[in-house]
Image (cartoon, rainbow, N blue to C red; front, side, top):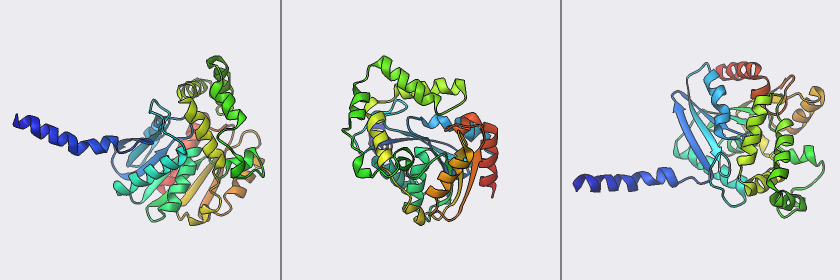
Length: 278
């Protein structure tokens, strides 16, 4: 009976560690300098497994997955803001210092947001095909206030049949990687995503504009962009959008779409390891 009560007490003590976070799930592995791995939209944390295996330096990896994706329960909107808040809470709670953040796409946006909010904790950023203001690229001149959750486009996606959404998933995945095998994986991730999160989470990203807060980022930053379809034009977009960021290097991956780690993995791992070694 005594053992039962001790076990019961321990369960109450440890429960908060498992139920504290609703917007994120963290998988922690290894030992050494802390690296926070942030995937992009619809992408589970496991997208970083091969990158982590390629690292030359000893590191403690903190691998994040987001609510609504990777089998995690969905949360209410605003989705992005909830993820950001819980990531900040996690970094402070775990007392992560001299932190490196590696973020792809939306994960890069979160990395910028975190580095701006906690400049004394984040020492390095690696941003993989991430733009501070996606809206400016897709809808030049549009204001955040013009992006509505209740748009006709969003309603159409929410009401779309499974067969029609399969076609959307294929087109989206095909536009993001040249690697046919990985394309099929992306399609599966998109189809498995919570539909509301897919729609309203993407709306959050279109509303996002981090260009001004780049001034608050003190971390040394490596920006890796995908060259497809025009490397010169694409690099110009990166230089323009990251103009307010001081300590940065921008490099372009040849023959690559959005998922550089899928299309040019050897080049990608080389750049990551060289930057971490500095």
